[in-house]
Image 1 (cartoon, rainbow, N blue to C red):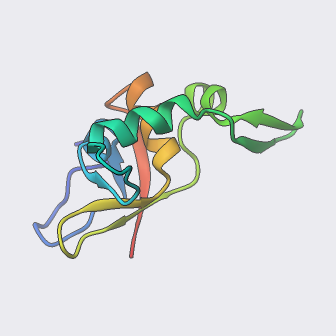
Image 2 (cartoon, helix red, strand yellow):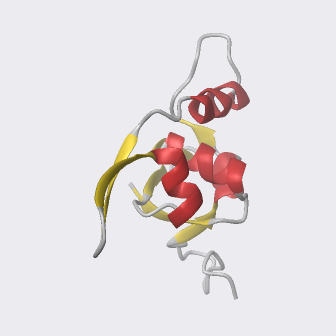
Length: 110
């Protein structure tokens, strides 16, 4: 059983595949643009840096290479009411879905 499989229909999954998250509406929008335009723009904006700390390193690294190497570590935020939509973590979702749509992404619900 995948971690995104709910045991009960009313149970919210703690992890969702990146492709499923990308199929949700993003909370960001562009005038005259589609949801697909938003996700493509977020994928191109791979400029953010994340801090990587472990036993051997403490460095700042661009978010894209970090996600491709380690997966998504910080949960993305999703709102369910009014239809599910991603409200925080658009870059993480876009990069993860582009790399591997089946990648499990941690989710926090508002």
